[in-house]
Length: 369
Ligand code: AHE
Ligand code: ZN
Image (cartoon, rainbow, N blue to C red; front, side, top):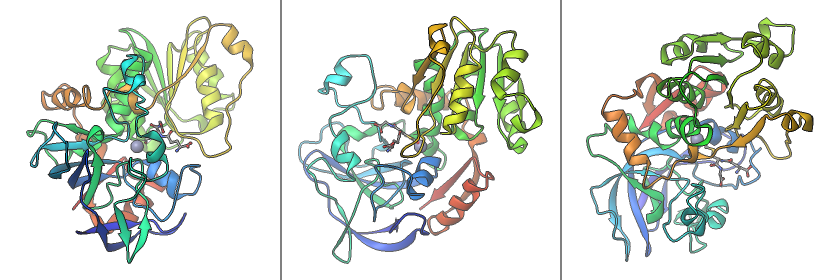
């Protein structure tokens, strides 16, 4: 079939919109019509050429929601008409990683996914005979996409599809990091580095956990009002201080925070996030994605004296068994996704969405097909 897709031909080039060829679902695969998709920094990161797994030409996009149109042979868990969220972190019950009960990092199709291919090692996308790579196993910047069955989470049909795309990355990534990775407890002091969508979701999650102080940190003070409306008890701009950022936070918190979250992907900020943690027990969770070749550093003494460095992917959320429950929590009013959606636009305005994100003007732009 033909589908309208945004093609990323090469790093740092604007996306081009074309009718591309899409092969139907093979065994164990599902054809999905994406209803909305939103733009995450990780799409921008890959388009910038800094992603060691970035392959071109490709169809980007990993935060979306859609409707199953057709299923391939052997697919039993979804049927046409089901509403689904594509999972860049799939969940295969036969995967030993999943069976361990210790992680959400399913590895069943991770290798081919990183190569921009479906599990059989081929792509379903092409344009004028030239292969286009998939991206993060999702490629939601195409109106129709093909996904492995283990990479779709069936969600409640009451979830408004115009908004649900943010449940595909930002919200579970931030909230999940708070609940599953850090396990923030009532009264804890939390520092959130970077007030994009993921940072906002960390704040919202920390508030739901009953955190005492929630300190938002960003060089763009225009983000502070939203952060405070979601639960930040105070916000600070590192540019307003002469002292190193970790010292400022240690001073503010009588010795450091219980948990910090790095939601930018800046390795210097990761160090500050670790070092502002309380001696003896403070934990820092890395969520931000750093570019190829970047490395983190600190004095080992920071860890010897009890600080803990951790990371979190997709918030430690099991996509098929836990994400639908998070969607239900949203529907029940436990939290709201409206604050994340700063812009709504059409598919062919995606390049504008990239510009807005780059300039720090958007939290999430939702693209409606
Ligand atoms: N391809 C990059 C790594 C990118 C990365 O870390 N991705 C996160 C999700 S970012 C969502 O906005 C992730 O889930 N990683 C787990 C995984 O298996 O990729 C690189 O550095 O190679
Ligand atoms: Zn993302």
